[in-house]
Image 1 (cartoon, rainbow, N blue to C red):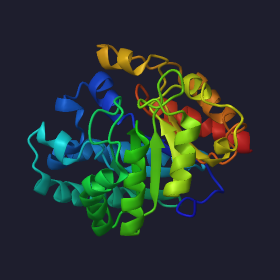
Image 2: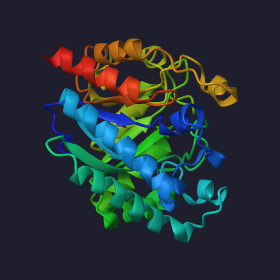
Image 3: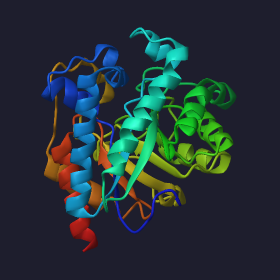
Image 4: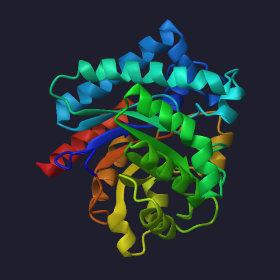
Length: 304
């Protein structure tokens, strides 16, 4: 994974939306965070988040992935909140510029600017089955990321192998490193029923992205997929939920289950045993800066 140096853990956060909604009282129609780019207040909030993430890196020595808030910035999902497909390259450029400004002020903290990509539809559903269709659909966002000067793209919460393959291949064609992250249900399988091990192997053989990861599941659920197979050595990142609730329960919940930041940090650090290539750690649904700070600190202590 040459895009991310292996001499340090890297911290990623894909749980910003739940923090904004439940902890900060910010309304995100359709769960879309990318419209924040189009308001001064929204950009200021994002800049503060980036600054606090960089501060965690300064405290712990961890590298920081500065993800753009563009997980839902694809034509189908953006249309629900009033954005046309032709608006999205501009959104991507502005989002990268904001993250790049934060990276420029990071001092000695290692940072990478990543354009976050999500599935075409609901992340808790199987998603696109055909790799070719997926590549064509996601290519405009990936090409906009390249044109904007992003360091990489990170595709999170994918429930189908075909969609993951398509994104990885489109990123390779654009010359951008890609972090590709599946999500699993409580049984350790993707929403399309594929075992995580089989999904990882298919992606490694069919596209070989910069990193294969898993996110939006509690470590307990992820661990149910472990069978001792060689595929576990291919997993390079875990960006976990703090909550043990299922995806269906999370979807229906009107309250935030923030779990235990210290427990999540311990579990992430413990995964370095069964996942020897693990380099990216972080928080997804229900997490906030407390979880990330605890995880980065625990990982630093483990390395020390």
